[in-house]
Length: 149
Length: 132
Image (cartoon, rainbow over all chains, first blue to last red; front, top):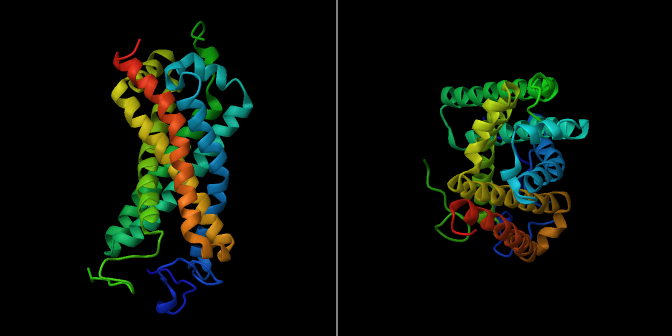
């Protein structure tokens, strides 16, 4: 399956200087691929805040990952804000990343059977991680381990 | 695979964005592969403090922290380059200024990496025992 794009004549496609004309870069002409194109951009905008914020908060500032342990997570997930943040990030990052892998598989894997198998593998893996993450984010209850926090 | 020739030479050249296109892919794949592992290691928190603290202690190793710096760099690059892509896609006339905008996005990434590398680098050196 190849992606149909709203293309222009090849000569006008890649000028050395940059300007691609008033229609800009190619994008899918319609159907699923156009929705995929739009989804990557919308989820990208949201992840710009969720994922970049997460990375800076958890990995850079305030001793970064050194301060992270069970007690830290228990305190943090005491707030519904962080549970919601982490769950939204889980869903969007998995969907954005697995759709990205699908695009890459489409570019490099030519044999339909292998392409299907690769896509299925990532979709099932992603769904499994979505279920695992969702269950943990919403059912985690530190009071089951008294004295741990 | 068929050899492709571009309009401007024998080497494939998509546009001035060819290298950022490649970097966007590489950082994207790196991030999703890490995410697969990260969902699992975080989920271990549901098995209690003993299990979780054991797992999370992996992140407190200085070699892993070096990889972590790479992860943060990948996320920042992918995010900033993603904004650049959206600027070009949502406002096509901005591709008229593709080179300066691309340069600005690269500069922004490099500038953001200065404090990040400083902060995380100190932590890595402390963990490795080089610094007090």
